[in-house]
Image (cartoon, rainbow, N blue to C red):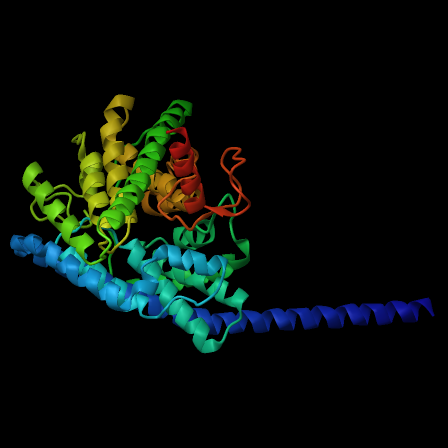
Length: 452
């Protein structure tokens, strides 16, 4: 009798095991049928976007007078958003909000609006990036897929995360960093592991699709061979403080100037006009155009690009000038993103700090490239992986140390105000559970007013 019960028990367990595996296989197949075409579409759009950026940048180099049309281009983009795109003006923050609390979804029109707006910004010389556009392209398409397939709220959250991963991985050619970024950017101190595999698949497919269209990403070489010892790691940690504080400065300056412009100039389309005039004035005042655009292509052989900071020459203040140009551009309402300018600022700051620490400029440029972004975006894991993907594994330890120190030093601040604080970096009694960085910033402002 006991043997009979044992046999029945074993058969029941086997049947349950097979049923679970069948359910799992069905779920995997279902997600694959959704993710692969969605990520391929995102990768294709990112390829078209990157080609467009290269084309308009070369056009601006060939016709320098296009800079003087920046205020007009800004007005056109601002008016277009004012008339048709108010619901998508939140950009990356809107996508993060929809992942946290699915509601109306991300409108599909976000994709053409941000594509057009970013291309116009770069055609006329605004200092902006491209990750914002890639993430919004991915989020918009992912949301469209979710609505078409009538997915529930939880599945929609996952799909939006995969859209971020696909866009980020495709536009920078760093699929591992793209997947981790999508999981890490949502909340400080928490990684959404439930979407780990879908995000990895989406990032890989997006990147492979982009490469299949013939896109080539920039390559940065760290030529120096420096032993990774305790002294080098300590230097990277100290430099990480500078990277974190600079990332904090960038984020706060962008939010503060943007908020001030909104109060002073309530009519949205006029803000880019003022910003465009300010950029033109900066070019005339400083006598250089090196800080316009992405900073990845050069108009002349002696122009500064991100690659310049990996060479032997020291550029002491390029990081501050690029920060100034970018804050003026983005706070005025021009479209694009913050990440590529942050790469420029970080590499330039690393180049400036290298002689003080007695290390090769290329090595600190590489560390600053990712560490400053880690501080500004509160994504140290993603930036560590990005450093490995871009520069190899030889300097993993100093890169990781700088990224994590920068993350700690940037505090509860960042470029994405909808990011939540799941685990505070330091004890913060004023932060309610899952408070956003916007909430933290509002609290700091009210405390300053109370003291005044």
